[in-house]
Length: 256
Ligand code: NAD
Image (cartoon, rainbow, N blue to C red; front, side, top):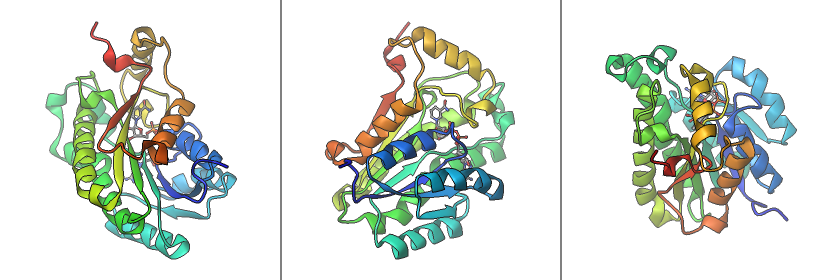
């Protein structure tokens, strides 16, 4: 029997089979979780639907996280279909490509607003909508961050600032929801080649650096992130909340 048998989880952020969210979805499914999957817009639906169906997802719904209505509708549908929810995986972010090159100093007001809204505020909005369905069920919320929240990573720019806000939100949400038995954690993943990563100038250099400098001398895989997400979603991590778990082959411990 899988460790997530009987649990219901919603996965936000699958774009294709390279997505971190897809790696997590496969692992949670393998361990017995029943999954709901979302897509952002019609173009994404074409790619996400077959993937979600291959894991037997009972609900496959639109959820652009800039829309409070779509968020509300998603969790209403989950409530009426399953009567509750155990797991939320928030694996999404967005910034205009122009903001992910050059100097952070040149970040535009609108570019800053958009990046912070989609990449950080959305965790607050999604968690607030999910919380009533998770009470009394040992709920777990997991989001995805990156080392650029802690240190300057050239070209990562406004996304680093958005990830810093995301990690701080994890701590504040953990404090708010701990009394209800709901845990909120982040995985700080090492660089991995995905659609979102393709928007970052010189991403290939980031991958190369990670491979050279990480104690394990390799970059991470979708399975690495899936395993860490499984830990944070399962009762094996019942005493862990407000945490940022690095899944980066040790890269963040290196000073030089
Ligand atoms: P991805 O492109 O596969 O996934 C990004 C997802 O964000 C897509 O599914 C996209 O539809 C979704 N998204 C964008 N705007 C949205 C909106 N308004 N509403 C709903 N969804 C929206 O790329 P990924 O690398 O798997 O990214 C997933 C998460 O992992 C992101 O938070 C990213 O910052 C984080 N992360 C990625 C890396 C990496 O190197 N790839 C490293 C650390 C953290």
